[in-house]
Image 1 (cartoon, helix red, strand yellow):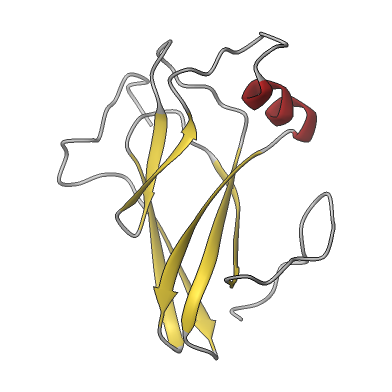
Image 2 (tube, rainbow, N blue to C red):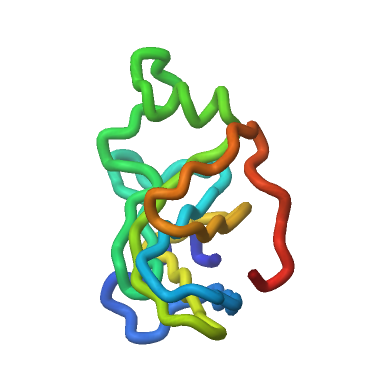
Length: 133
């Protein structure tokens, strides 16, 4: 997104990623968004986005890139990914999530959607991609 200092907090129209998927069972689901290690383009500023209008923070304003004492920075570097999740209620059938940045710099790598409380198998790269379900 350009300019790099773009801020979409007050904008009615924001860039968006729309993802449709099929659910057989209605209920509460965890939506986990994996983003790249991009830092906020402004020091001491959050890097936030929304998932269906729910505001999430990928990088907090207290984030201190390059500081080995900052656990948020260290775990992101070691895992080469940042994971942010939220809980959303879905009906059965074709559903949709809309991801919108609030600040420039967000790059989405992967989206995982699974039933709330379900423990995913241990895997460094996450589960295999499914087609629609």
